[in-house]
Image 1 (spheres, rainbow, N blue to C red):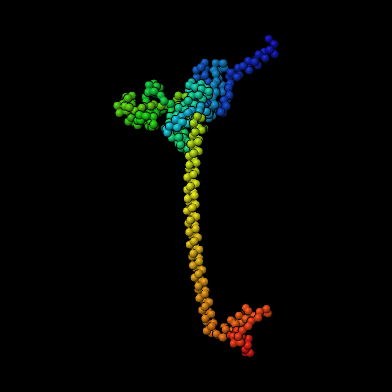
Image 2 (image 1 turned 30 degrees about the vertical axis):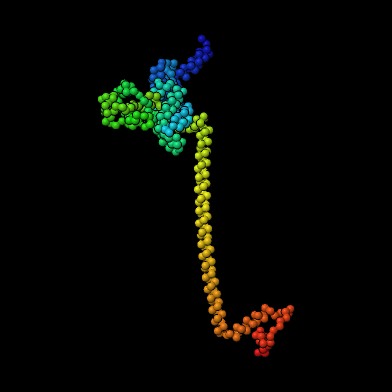
Length: 348
């Protein structure tokens, strides 16, 4: 065989073998290696990795936060109001092997997580009022839904088979004392757990609903980090009538506020008018008093002046009278003995 042909065959072999021998794990990925379907190892650190060529297969998953948009669901609230709730959840793959065994890939995870979130959201909203779902209390509701979504209900038989006993740190037991679905279940006490260890149906817990739950990580290899409501609307068939009722209610409230405002306006204006009248009357009284005091002082001054020199005062007043009626266009006929002529006729 020619050396050139040998080099070509060798190059082709390398091109085929190298991709089957080495693989790269990105910093945003996590990978598991299987040999003929059997799990071999997990690669959680980024870099160039080695595997047995042809015999081993590599499956990579995204180790970042993944988002699932749940299908919109029509849910009945505690006050019997229908709401169409559109929600989403964010989850992370924490156990790639369990994730691969139970869900296979992200497509399967999206469907399962969406179902879990909608189921828990339906149970939680059924215990809340409509105004709580659409108000600032929604944050507390979302925390409860997130916590509940991370717990998977499991039968007592499966608990004993998989964990050996119900008294396991991964198992949480809830007791629902209500005969209806209008109340939330509570965590079982240590005494109740001790009773359940001895019997699946203790006499003191007869009539109660006992629920066993395990961490979602143990079942699906994921952790749901957050659940959020994108939109909470009324169903389309009643949306128009609801909006009309809301508008009528807001108009009624607005009319009441306008009437209350008009009443306040009238009260304030009446009070202001009253204060104005009081101020004016007080000012007029003060003015009349000051005017009277001034008149009194003027009379006193005048009287004092008359007492000091009555003749001079008479002379001054007569001159003022002359100024009023004596001019070049007026002819006056007076008695020679008139007091007005006294100063005109006198030589002194």
